[in-house]
Length: 332
Image (cartoon, rainbow, N blue to C red; front, side, top):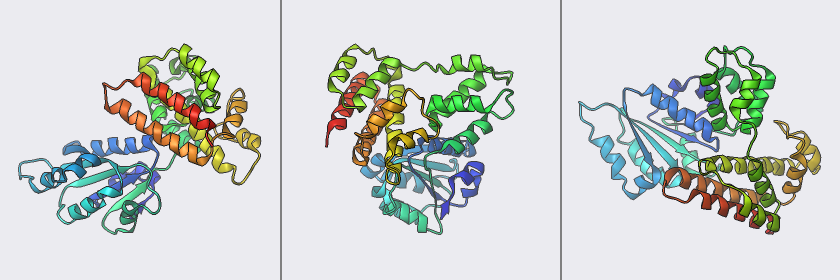
């Protein structure tokens, strides 16, 4: 059974009739919000967070939790992260024994030929929804909804938030939390807002990122040696890279119907800052779909390492990524 994600945003309780539900897609921010809503709706139940990898190593982890529930235990809700087709057989087996428990599965992109995706889409007893990337319209609605009741919320302020976050739902949510905490009187002042959002990004890193994406090895090496990396900003650096790569992917898709790159860049939403347009046009000539997909997989893996392993050398991961960007940009 297929559900539209925007309908679930309005009423997630509508999926309570399903014991097993699949969320998939590249919109990490939306999936994060669904997880939070699931936890809030089930605050009186026991929430168990699991990863597919640990279940595949020992499927009894899941089966025992379901089978061994006593009368005195709370109902259980399972959240399975980083799932793909490999878990389908286990899910099929669990479906035969599950009773009151709920299982919510979270996956990244699942192609149309994915067995897991097809299983849930064709099922009459399980549900699924695709979490596709946000567009400018959905982000504007999100901002307007979360800042409803705030005086001074204008179109200009909404655009400032979008431009500062690259229309990334995760970053939008973080910035909105800042705004709610800062403007307790619910009166937004644009001067204080600009200061709060720290719109002056790391110019040195942006230069380094752009030279790497252009494949300029000499400039990249020089900037790599001179750029100071703030240890607390590694995810921020990664987001800057992902924003640009995703923008290049958007241009690459549009090029199939229109070969005028300059016109495509001029018509992108949200609008590209005028100083960035020549750089973006130049980069778009170097990056094709294959390169873009390969580097997005790499940035995802790096983000996972940074967030899951406190001992990993985060600065080294980012620096190696910069080198990989430069090499990939000049490859055939």
